[in-house]
Each structure stands twice: as structure tokens, then as C-alpha cells.
Amino acid sequence: MNAADRRIALITGANKGIGLEVARQLGKAGYRILLGARDHARGVDAAKTLQNEGIDVRYVAVDLSDSASLKATATDIEANEGHIDVLVNNAGIAVQGDGLPGVTDLDVVRQTFETNFFGTIAVTQALLPLVKKSAAGRIVNVSSGLGSLTLNADPDWDYAAVKITGYNSSKAALNMFTVLLAAELKDLGIKVNAVNPGYTATDLNGHSGHQTIEEGAAETVRIALLPDSPTGGFTSTEGVDPW
Image 1 (cartoon, helix red, strand yellow):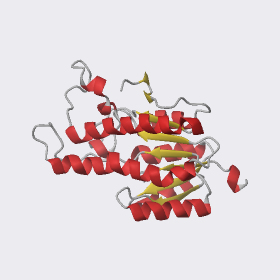
Image 2: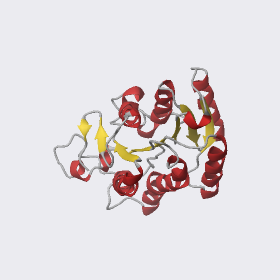
Image 3: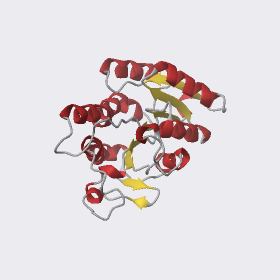
């Protein structure tokens, strides 16, 4: 296949959990996978796992806190791949000590925002020129139902008691970034959406979620693969989620 015709997907935080499963499923759908991770050894090991499954994949360094590293990665991808068709912003953290707004240490909130919000903006800005080179660019931001203002305000919501200041607020900010970026790029045909993966058993929550990793990856993969997806949306496997 000509390099210009090859479909390429980059997934951040893809060395484990939902990110790794999204990489696996997009790889099985025929995409060349750029497996983004901060930790080199873990990223390389994850890429080898997918290679052993017959997936066309290579590790790329993605450290959301290091602008020089992001720039170097973008330069590498431009030289060796030429473009990105799908960017999945999956990397995210939950910090120990996060909790109610009246008592949570501001350093915990700032640390959470550095990855979940500012880091996502940083990697998107670094890679956006490559997405613009795609004939049908897609950006999928992995958010959370905890980022929904509407659901957080509903006392009858299943997770109404989960008032985690840094995490919830960072995902709400990510949702706003999704809406703004979708509006900015709509005339270029680049579709930008946020996804609520659901409460999935991952390291992030001590594997307390009730969904499997495969179930948690499903909506991100679906939105990434839609031939003519909407833009500026927020969805889950249950349908459209409220902002």
C-alpha cells in the first residue's frame, strides 16, 4: 500500500487498559497503529504484544507534559508516516487525594488538570497539522460521565455521590475543549467528539468498574470508525450523553 493511502491511528496512553484495547481494535480494523505512551519500556512491550497479534504497530513517545518531546514526535511522524487519520486522546489520570471541593488540595487538582486537560490540548496542538493532512481526520477525546454537568447535578444519577473535584472538573473542561475544537475544524471536515467509555475496570479505578476493557473501548472505536460521524458530540454505548 502506498504510504499516502495507509490509514494511521495514534492513541495516547495506549500501553494498557482502554487505550491498548482501542489500539488493538483499530489495528484489527486495518489501521497502522502509533502506540503512544510516556514510558518507553512499557510502550515498546505493548507494541510487541500487538505485533504478535498481527497488528501493524509501532511505539511513539507521547509525554503530555513535555512540549519538546511532543514536537519531536510530531516531526518523526511527519517524516515516517506523513499524516494521522485518527487521533485518540485517551491518556488520563486520577490522583490520590482527589475529593470534595471544600477540602481537596489544589496541587491534586492542578496535577489532574495538567494531564487530563492541558496535556490533551498540548498533544492535540502538536499533532493537529498531521490530522489536517488526512482526507477524513478524526479526533476522539476519551472523557467520562463524571465530566457531565447535567449528570453531576442530578441527585438520582447512579454516580451522584462521586464528587471528585479534580477529575470531574478536568473531564468537564475536556468536554468544552471538544466543543470548541469541533467548531474550529468543522469547515475542514475533521470530526471531533468526546466519548464516555463507562465505568470500566482499569488501573485508574483499582479495577472496580463493572465493564470489561473491551466494553470500555467500544464507543471510542465506533466513533473513530464511523465513515461520516457527527462532530462536537458526547456519546456512550447508551447513546448521546448530556453535557
